Each structure stands twice: as C-alpha cells, then as structure tokens.
Image 1 (tube, rainbow, N blue to C red):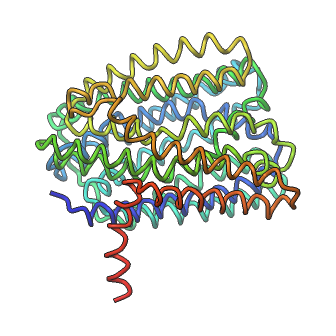
Image 2: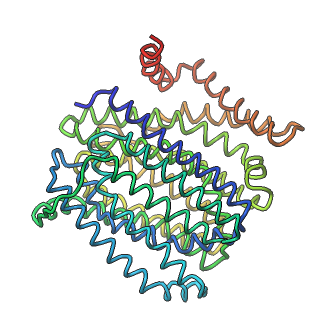
Length: 481
C-alpha cells in the first residue's frame, strides 16, 4: 500500500513541475501575444489540430497499460518503447505526405512547410512515452520537474528571440519543437530505465488488450476536441479561432497544473489498491473534494475579473476572448471530477466501461456541436459548456455501482466549495468596479477574492481545508524542528 505521505510528496513534485512550466508558459504567451498577431496563433492552431490527434496513436494506450499493470518488467517497457517509436515514425511520414492536402483543405498553401516541420513533435513524443510511464509507475515525479522546467526555459528563450527578430508564426513552431525535444533529452538523462534489445509480441498483445480501449477512447476524446478547432478554423477565421483558444488557455493553464498532478498520481495509486474497492472509493472522494476546493475559487475569481486580466496581460486587441474565458472557467472547474471518476474506472481494470462512456459522450457532444456551429463561435463555446456538464454526469454514473459513489453523492461533496467560490468571485468583481489603476486593481481582486474564500472556508469548517491543514502541519513542524 502506498502511504499518504508518499502520495502527497509526489503530488507536490508534480504540482511544482506543472506550476513552474505553466508559469513560464504563461509569461512567454504574454510576451508572444504582444509581439505576434491573433492570426499567427490561429494558423498554428490549425496545424496542431492534426498533431494532437496523431499523438494519441503514438501512445496507443500502452503507456497507461504499463501503469495499470501490477508488476511490469523490462521486457514490457522495452516492447512498448519500440512499438511507440515505430508508430511515431509512420505517423510523421503520413503528415509529410498529407501536408499539401491539409493546406488545400484550409486554402492556405503556406501551411505545407509549417505542417511538415511542426509534425516532428510526434517523434519526440514517441521517444519519451515509456520514460513518462516509468516515472509515474515508480512514483519518482521529481524527474518530471527537471525535464519540464528545463524544456520550458529553453523553448521560451528560443520562441521569444525568434518572435522579437520577426520570425512570426515560426517562432511558435520553434518553441513547440524545443519544448518537446529538450524535455525528452532531460528525461533520458535523469530516468534510470533504458530500453534493452528485447521484444515480445505476446507481452504486446496482453498490454494492447487493455490499452486498445483506451486508445479508441482517447481518439474519440481528442478527435472530438480538435473537431471544434477544425470547424472554427474552416467555417470562420483564424482570428476567431485565436480568440476561442486564448479564452480557453487562461483557465487551462491553471487547471492543467492541478489536474495533471492529480491524474499522474491518482492512477498508479489507485491501481495499487485495485483489489480494495473501499480504498479506491475513499481516494476518489478525497480527490474530488480536495481538487474542487482548490480549483473552484481560482476559476471563479478569474471569471469575475476576466476583463481586467485580458486588458492588462494581453492588451485590448484580445478583449474579444473575454466571453470565451468566462465560459471555459466554468467548464474547466469540473475537470478534476472527470479525472477522478475515470481514473477509478481504469484502476479497476474496466477500460471497457471507459470506452463505452467515451462513445456516449461523443455522440452527445457532436449533436451539440453541429447544432451550435450555425449560430457562431460563442454559441459553440456555450455548447461545449453544456457538453461538459452532461459529460460529468455520464463519467460518474458507473461509479454508483463500482464504488457506491454516484453523482448525487459527489454533487453534495462539491456544492459547499462551489458556492463559496462564487461568493469570492462576486467580492472580486465588486473591487473591479472601483476607480483604480488597472494593475493594482487586478492584484487586489485576486488577493481579496482568494482571502475571502479561505476565510469563508474556515468559518464554515469546509472538510477539504481541514484535511489539507492536517497534512501540511506535520510537514511544516518537521521542517521547522
């Protein structure tokens, strides 16, 4: 059984990694947004639509299968490594051949060299997938901290330098490539596992029997997400796509820090307890309550102060993304609920249920997408919010029987934190009505909003706050002592 302390320490490392990476990314995006035009971002987003989908194939669900397996050995890891490399090379060749057709689809001939260059990301992903699985399985998340921060710093220097010297959208391409390959190199240096010249089709078959359902599920999820981008880029303009993406990016930066940390640690921890469903249930409940407690105030304060955030950080030329930012704040606030429920299902070995859920959600989501696309990009964003809420209910449904922890029970656990977060958001918004300089006003909105949330949580004795204090106090006491 993995101790609470080990889980918490690894969560801190993973959270520090995500925070460091996203802080650097956030600063870089601010600088690049000031140097580049919205259309530059939109064109790169068009290229990345296909990359994100093919990245799913590069993994094939095998990395998750390694994490879920109780005792994977070197033969398992080496087999998956060589399989991923072969798939990545085939996928890159496909993108090289398909680049002219992608450019023709968007009626943009200049996309050909962009697509062929940025597709090199696929190979870097194939090289590091197994290293990442090894780190997750062995709970050594400190390695992620080194690789991610090193890659983020190097790619930031390259991207900003190129943008400053007038390379336009190519600076974004270079930033993506350096981030991928530098991160991969650092992982190869710091992670003790290296592939051996061994391979087993029998092991591959066993791992794929679990992983193929996750592959199809991931394809459905990624294809669905990128379809929104593809339709906006095709039906509307690159600038519309840039506003949609930029509004999505702000809450995504915050959510990714917490959600990726939870996701990376929760699956291997739950998998180690898969024979004890009561423990898995308790882990799921604690993950949902704690993550929402942290996530909700961040999203609500950001939503209620969104106009000032965009105006100060990106300048007024990006104000069209404010409505999208507010919508995605609400949507992303519930991501940890999806993550906890789905990790519980995977940890119990029920990838068949996972796949069925994805099929149901995507049929529902596509119906919403095709209905809203005729009414504009903002209507599509509202549709994604409706889809997200319904997906949350769908993801939690199986755990009513698997764990005895259904959606109504989960909702009772969520509501206290959400209501207090809305109250903190209202406080933050009221400060935005004062006649003050923009910078100090935004800082005051964030500080007072966060402080009011903590005070209200303490007054109402919110369980998650008490839980976090119980964990932190002994660690702080040991450090001081």
